[in-house]
Length: 499
Image (cartoon, rainbow, N blue to C red; front, side, top):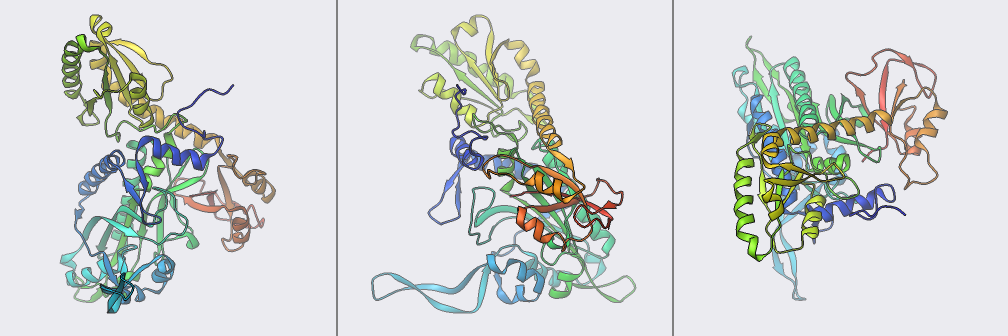
């Protein structure tokens, strides 16, 4: 008989439905009345705030400032960059009228047609580029290093909470430089910021690499990305950094007078991550009992559950509050430990599973018997059994316990990736690795393969629903033989099924 789990179905039984149930059980988000959009609930939004805060500190430490640009983009702005508009055209939401008026049937209808349609921001290269064109006159105005935290709309037909929604939250950095070398260095610096954040804060190992031409951001000269393996062995693109060359500068007329007095087009970059990172956290660490959160990002790192009857309430609560204050005085990852007391009037077992399903790293239970021994009953989210520990030892080691959990989550995710990564040298092996008789069965993983021609393998990839995730920056640089054609190949890519 299979052990009972808090989440049904399990990952093995139905991974997509398991994912939805984890979100529901952890109270992260819910579907909104608008198709494809979501309501991010307090626990989910606190998680996003912690992601924001950590990333924002990293951006500012590398010299960037925050600003805000308009939600609406004139259609003519997108038309100036042909490849860019082609890449986003099918996803654009378009505003054509500026007011409503009553209709004869008692409802409302659009009125006041706009002279020019406005696009609801799918990304901001064009509108920000038009602004920068006004700001940049001389080489002395450069570089411009700006980030904005915003929402964007991409009219997705098939949506999944956090992973792909019609509206989502993100940050987008947009920078302008006097030389190609400076812009390339910026592009590489920011993908490294994303890599460090993913691995140090999210406990999620990633591969850094270049996108192939067909997978690049529309209009970019080069796209760098971080790619992670989820527990169903699919890849998730968790962040991208784009070297835009002079393409957008020429479309938006971002020009400057150089030190020698000539007029030159600037070099630009853009880079971003989104609330998709919450989906990545869920699928990297969570288990069949619910959400598992890395301590650095958990909204609450420790929860204390007092256990008492009416006659012992005062004693237990005094003890619990003093312990809370003692724990909050400790630091972890450079900040006071986030500790809360759950004194709700519900059964202890229900309360315990509430916090397990929400992924709280450490749970403490304290009743009169524990107080008599000056100890607590402790549960760590990735350990199957709780244990008793003295109060003194708990307080002195709680920072270490949190860091151990953080490290163990990273190690487990890395082990999953490494044990499901293969090197493939021929088409038969490639087909076998990515083919299954049951699409609901977890299979495949990451395949490292030499390839000579992206166009030549396009049909095979489409048939198997596989993509080239990236050409790893730190991967096998040795030339080899294309797994498909047998021709000499200079590069090795990471192939995977992906979100």
